[in-house]
Amino acid sequence: MEIIDAIILGIVQGLTEFLPVSSSGHLELGKAILGDNSIPEESLLFTVVLHFATALSTIVVFRKDVWTIFRGLFQFRYNEETLFSLKIIVSMIPAAVVGLVFEEELEGLFGGNVAFVGYMLTITALLLYLADKARETEKKVTFLNAFIIGISQAIAILPGISRSGATISTSVLLGVDKTRAARFSFLMVVPLIIGKMAKDIIGGELQFESEQTLAMGAGFVAAFIAGLAACTWMIQLVKKSKLTYFAIYCFVVGFIAIGFGLWG
Image 1 (cartoon, rainbow, N blue to C red):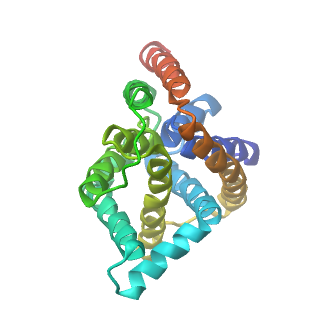
Image 2 (spheres, rainbow, N blue to C red):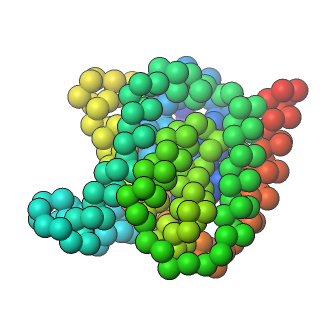
C-alpha cells in the first residue's frame, strides 16, 4: 500500500468513524477505488489499525468521561459512575461474542465486496432516517438499553452498517436523549477496539511487513487527526437533528456501490 493511499484511507476512517456513514464500508469502497488488492486478513489488519487511531481520538475528546468510567470500575460503590461503567461493559457483550465466534467469517467480508457494502449502507440510511424523526426526550441509558444498543454495535461489525449510526439510532429509537446517545455510542466502542488490538498482539496476529510499517503509521496519524475533528462535529449534528442528510448520503452511495459491485 502506498503512503498517499494510506493517508487518504486514514482520513476517510477518521471522518466516517464518527459521522454515521460507516467507516468500514467507506474503507472497503476506498480500497476498491484505489485498487488495493490486499487479501482479506491484511485488509482487516489495516482496518483494525485505523480503528485504533479513532479510538485514541475518542479517548482524547472524552478524556473526562473515560476517567469517570475507570474510576467507577474501581470505586466498588453503588453510584452513577459505577452504573455508567457497568452499562458500558454490558454494551460490549454482544459485539465481543460475535467477534470471537465469527472472526474468520467476518474477515472474509473485508475483501472488497462492494455490492454487500452497498446493501448495508441502505440499511444504515433507513436507521438514520427513522432516528431523525424520533421525538426529543431526557431519558438516560438503562441496562436493557445498553444491551440492545450493544446488539446494534455487533451488527455494525458488518462493513456498510455504520457503528455510530446504528448505535445512536437505536438509542434514540429507544427514547434515549440524543446527546446522551451520542456520548454513550462513542465511549462504548473504545474498550472493544483496545481489547481487539490486545488480543491480536498477544496472539501474534498483528505482524507488519517492514515495507508496510510507514504506510500503516501514516494512515494511523491521518485517522487520529481527522477523528478529533469529526468526533466533536458529530455531537453537535446529533443535537441539531441533522441525521436525515446522512441518511440521504448513505442511500445514494449505497445504490452506487450496489451498481458498481454488480455491474462494474
